[in-house]
Length: 113
Length: 113
Image (cartoon, rainbow over all chains, first blue to last red):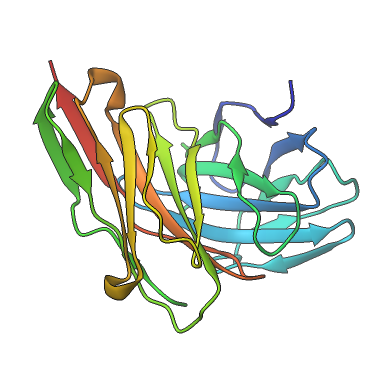
């Protein structure tokens, strides 16, 4: 079955620690995205990548970093510089064309203790 | 960024009632794409429909139907004979050709037994 996997589902972190969220897709999609969702809120774009070894900042990139070394993988690191990291993080992908539908993974809920 | 508005923050209906979720978008473009996603309590966004700006035909899929009206920049979603399993947050989104997605803030639908 093709799809997007995110791990772990729940993640707890102490203040001051970096943490990396995993996102893998086997849809052969070119573009991948990271969104943040706060309780009762919509989605805000953190980073996106349209091709391997290239990525761009979204609307709220500060305190986050990404890499895109492989087409199927787009990990997100939440650094200690992110002041309020507790949120639900969603990874998504599209085939890559300018009109394509975005498909989402199951999400990772990060809680900072 | 051009905005997507979902004016209804929360809606509650009783099972078997019909319910319409409103979506109004801003655009200065002739080519764009509109989407609806469902986010059940599990958190994953599930794709429901994609429409391009050149196709104003209404669409029906089972109990779901969508009404796209360019004259009012609206793309409303109706659930007929609602069921408890329809309880979720529903997001409307817009994508201009080659651009990133813009999501509305979401409407939380509660279907009571």
